[in-house]
Length: 206
Length: 206
DNA sequence: GTCTATATGGCGATAGAC
DNA sequence: GTCTATCGCCATATAGAC
Image (cartoon, rainbow over all chains, first blue to last red):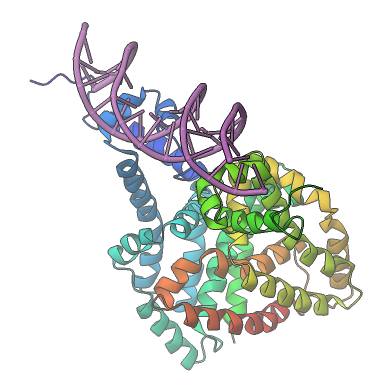
């Protein structure tokens, strides 16, 4: 019988991963030290190494866990069986909610991929994410006069930019437009979710 | 008479600042070592310290130089004396061109401010950037039936998100939508500049 | 499993020769 | 002004006591 301080096997692992996710997503890989993570998890640095041998391994775990939070939101909208416009409304709702709960994800992912593009390959393709299918659906809706004719890539970039930008630019927007008041900004984001559904649907309708 | 290897005083300073800007904007402050910058500038690390005493000082210089590249684009649109819709068209044109020449700026600025929010105060307010004046102009145009009635903050966030997003997400977009072909992506960005002017103006018109 | 102590390496910064 | 050599620090990672 092994010694076991924690009743649930993996309890400490979970605590560490949560701590690491918090620190990594806020400060990035290069801006994070193992000491930071150990402090956040309230353990010593050697204990951290005991559970996750290296900083690289721990980061890889955190990064994959983060992309696994994002990708399902995309997958859901692709496989779901509702009319295209409904899909967009659902996607805006889902994606916004995910970002409200995880506001640091977008900037973290974008920065880490920019610094180390090889992270890209391992994240999105692995989940079987294929935008082509969804693009075909969009183009078909354009042919049928349901959507305005546009380059689907512009349409998707519009959609993502409109949703993500407030989150990646939060400190600037909050500072310049909301007198640095966190609550005002949070209220604005909630309101913007509703606003965006109307705005985006109108922008793609004939 | 002082010894002077370089004919133009400040020639080496310029070379170093350019090298530092390149490395800092691509890898961030924490991801950059003085050795990186020295290598890029083709000098030794002590020589780097000779010109710019510390990493912090050099970074501050680079960061301010970067924001000084961005802020004038905003200022111009505020003080210019043309109708509102013309202002937006000019702004999209100016901002896009600046970003095509400096594609790493947005993610760099957003990441560094997120990690160290105190950088915000020193950058935008210092330049006398006041969005309030422009917002009043927008609201007045809404009253006069020139623009659709909306929260001007949503309008500005739409505008910036639509312009900036392709640049902060370049590796992902290029990877997923352009088979990692740099030229195809570059061509798309040029095309998007034109597209966005039409799209955005239509989205704000009554 | 968790700690103290420590090995090893890299980084920022400076001293000092030239 | 530019270099070699070096100091001191902090970070990652491990050894070994408990």
